Length: 108
Image 1 (cartoon, rainbow, N blue to C red):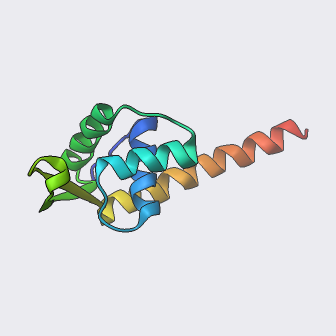
Image 2 (image 1 turned 90 degrees about the horizontal axis):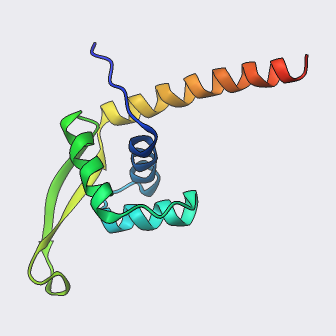
């Protein structure tokens, strides 16, 4: 099995997608990051990360319906893949293990 590594922004975006729990688009991810992580991320940066995550197989995407509000353009909707969920699960377990060691060492 190939090991996939992700950066902090990729992890936050994956978490936001997973937390919303249905196919989402970049604007809703941006709103989620601002609301819950208190991070204002440029929409272009989000689109760049989404392309990277799809190449890595951590998300899937599809085009949504055409919208008059968007000048006749459609939204690209994304959702977490099983591989993306597994990577997030593994990442949190690793972080928790390090944090437990930190706590243990700080009380020594």
